[in-house]
Length: 487
Image (cartoon, rainbow, N blue to C red; front, side, top):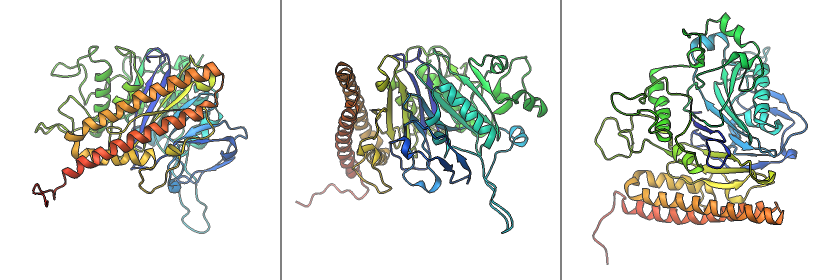
C-alpha cells in the first residue's frame, strides 16, 4: 500500500500532544470510521489474503477503526485509538533489498497443488495488523512488543512500517524480511517523515539489547545480520538503511521527493533544499529520518503536508508552467487515497477527552480534516454508515465527489476548496473547545456523542455547500458548452 506517514513528538507539537498520521493510499478503497466494541472483536481471527488463523486474547479493549466497506480483501482497519488512548496506524509499505529478502523471505500464502496437499497460510500483513494488536496494548511500547512477537511467530507477507503512540511516546517499527524487525522511539522534540521507503537511519544495538529505552529489535538481529553479511557500514556506526533498505531509480521518483518536500516545509532555513548547492534535493538518498522542526507543528501543518503536491515548485502537477518537471515526482496527496487520520493524544485533558481523531476521506489535496472524539461507543452515521454506492449522504463520498470535480477545474475551484477546508477546521476547533470546556465543567463525558453529532452535522453542511459550488463550476467548463442562449 503506497502511503506517506508523519510522526510528531510531544515537544515538537503545538500543544504537547503526540500526533501520528498516515495517508492510506489504496485503490480508491471505500472507507468508514467506526468503533469496535469488545463484544464485536473476534476471538479467532482469519486473514482473507494469507488464510492465516490466529487465536486472540479474551480481553480486548474498545478501539476505533477505519475499515474497508467492501470486505472481500479483508478488514484493512488502517488506524485507530483504543480506550486507553493508545493509537496505531498500519501500515506504511516500505522497501527492502534482495539480500534481506533472500535471507528471510516474506511468508506468502501457498495454495495446495493437489488434493493430497494442504494450503500453506501466509504471514500477517496490512490487512490484519490493527485488529491483531491495537485492542490488546496499554502503551506504544507494548504495541511494538506485541507486534514484534507476532512477526517472529507468524511472519509477514509484506515489508511494512507501523507507528504506535500514547500521550508520552511514539514508536516506529519496520519489518525486515519475513520474521525480523527493528523499532525506534521518536524523540520528543523531533518529527519523522516516511515516504514508502525503509526509513530508520541510525540504531543503537547496545540499547536494544540492554535497557531498550529508545531501540528494540528481534532477539537474533545481530546473528541474522552477521550470518547474511547485511551490514554495509564502513565507519563503525550503523545505518539500517544501508543494511535493510533500497536506493533504486524508482525510489528517486516515487519516494525520496516526498521526504524532500516534507523536510523543506518544516525546516526551510535549517538546510538548503534548492539550487546547485542544495544540502538535499528530491533524489537524495540521505534525507534524515527525523528532524527538529523550526517551529511547533500543528494539526493544520500535518494536514497540509499530507495533502501536498509540490506547491511552489516546478514539480506541481497543477502548475501552468510549460516544463518537463511538472508532475515529474509522485505527489504526497494523490487521487486514490482512501482515508487519512491524524491521531492526536492530548496529555493535558481528562482521560476520556485525550484522544482526538482528525478524519479525512478521498484525495487529501481537496478534502477536509474533521475532528471527532475517540472515546465513544459508536460514531455518527455521517462517517460510519457508508456503502460502496456513491452518495452525498456521508463524508466519504462527499469528499470523493469534490476531489473528482475539482481536479480538472483546479484553477477556478481551488479557492472553493481552500474555503471549505478552512471552514471545517475553524468550526472543528471551535466545537472541540466548546465541548472540552462543557464536559470538564459538568463532569459529563457522555456529551462526546453530542459533540461528534454536531461536528458531523457541520461537516455535512459544509461539504454539501462546497459540492454545490464545485459542481456548478465544473458544469460551466463542460466541452459541449455554448454561449448563445435559447431565450
